[in-house]
Length: 143
Image (cartoon, rainbow, N blue to C red):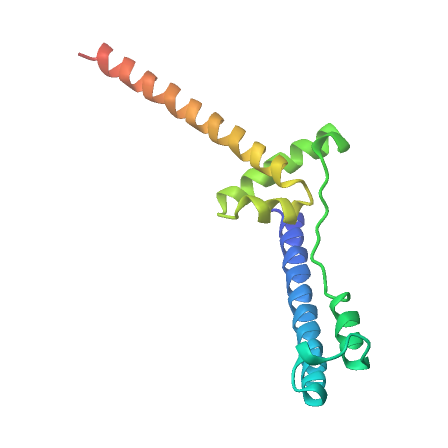
């Protein structure tokens, strides 16, 4: 595996790790706000809509971390970069990564990664079929 591809994988893992940490922090803060609201009103459901406790919860909910990845199309890349991306898709696929993860690692659309994988599978199946027919033909000639 190339150093650049390893770097892309590490970057993807860092994005996931940072998001998980931010998400945990968000929910920890939200839990504190809910507990404060319940301490004053016995239940979040009983808190008036204009209470500072409820308003803090509503505001906090808008701050929820969002996980997003680049989603380029092959048409937006040079032919050379697109060919490199296709090779990387196949390499990651052969390493066992799921399609969506491959797309996120490489910053391409999930449909693009999926289409590249399907084309690769068809190519492999075709090569296997050709080789199988060739072996059958050789066995028949040897009789």
